[in-house]
Length: 156
Length: 156
Image (tube, each protein chain N blue to C red):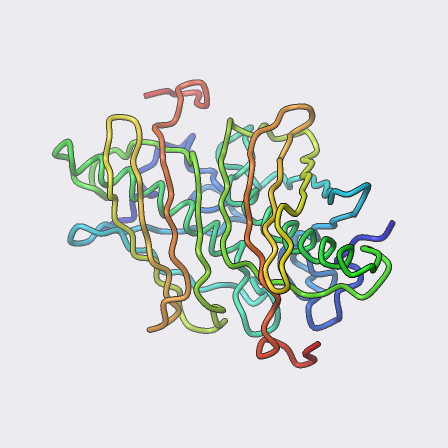
């Protein structure tokens, strides 16, 4: 299954977090599977808070992009479309909340699992868990809203 | 006045967000001034959500590091020390909440102004405003806790 970000229109594909056209970015890839949205990410060696531990700001950034993709996927499902196959609607972040449960060790792949807990016409609320290997180290709750047309060259 | 991060011990100076020893990092610098803590940051061209607008994940990351420095500074003031001059205590993030009020234009310097609204023995709550030029585009509320000794080679 392709990532949802692979089907963002080009003008939404420059994001530092998840844009396929941002050569310096993180390239978060969110895949819809069985009612949840999953992203897997290997932090770079420099993505540390202190030696041996992942930088919390990185986790917040991953959560941000992954939540926008989850919001898009949930919206698609609610309208009968298929996340990862059909054109993907564009959301922006209204609020981001991350609870850091424990230090995240650098080394294991990070796995972000997200679900939409509220899907409205313009607003979607996403909750997610972040794990390093088998250890859940953070949780996030993110409010996404449909991107205003004024932000795009090609509004839809 | 030096930045608070300049007086973090070396083992706390590798942070991707604010570590002076992280050559790939953002190098957030937080300066104490007249009861508040101020950081100024120029996003890189790649730090975009989409062309012309700053990536929200970057704003969350800046808020994270700036809040930890603000927590340290407020703790120092409460004990009679001088932020930016004396050794700086180390905090880690318990929770991070960012409200994105409007899109943040890429171009103007970002200015983060923070205050501690609660200073406890182990926990400090920080609130901040993020502005692009004269426009306030985000607010954050961050809970900081004293870093556990287990995270360091040189606990203090």
